[in-house]
Every structure is written in C-alpha cells, then in structure tokens.
Length: 141
Image 1 (cartoon, rainbow, N blue to C red):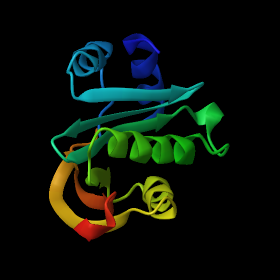
Image 2 (image 1 turned 180 degrees about the vertical axis):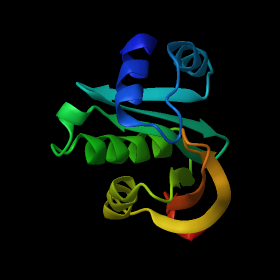
Image 3 (image 1 turned 120 degrees about the horizontal axis):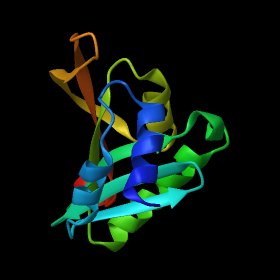
C-alpha cells in the first residue's frame, strides 16, 4: 500500500487524532523499526524498539468495516511484534473511540493508563488517550 493510499484510508477513518498525510506515512515507513501490515481497505502501522512494541495506528475504511479486518490486523501485529523480540506492546486510543477500545479489549489488550488531554479534536477540544497494553511474554505481567 502506498503512502497516498494509507493517507486516504486514514483520512476516511479519523478526525481525532487528526489524519496523517502521505508524507508522514512515507517518513514513518522509512524508519527501520516501523512495519506495515495491510489488507484491502485496512492497515496497521506498528514498531518494535528493543523489547517493546507500539501499535501506532490502525485504520479500516468505512466500506471495509465489520468484516474482521481490524481484529485480523491486531492479531497479526501481536505475532509480528513477538517475532521481532517484543515482550510487551502498548497503544494509545482516544477515550471517546468506543469501537476501537472494544476491538482492542476483544483481542486481549487491557487498559493500563490515561493521558489527559492527549488529543485535540478539530473543534479544539482536548480528548484523553487511554493507554492499553498487551503482555506478549506472560512473565512480564
């Protein structure tokens, strides 16, 4: 998937946090620790540094939703992160994004923190980020 395609799907999926540009995706994909997982109409961008993985963003185009793409990508991310040596993973999700939070809980993530006012809406409202974590190595729990 090209940076332009990623930006289009991201823009169709998000207002908060703001959608990322094609150039931002190109820059992220150039970083050696980052990796992309995709399927038609959906993608996940993650990274592994040392023994920690971060799910940077997950986007599913509106017409591709409710078909399991998000859950498949999250499970693939967890396996890929573990293959890259990660023992734990984390992500931030907007507190008001109930669909995403439900997806992450369904795939085994747990809420582990809160970043007050982390995101800014298009209307300039501040929205908390819920930090979620996943233990890839049961010994780290």
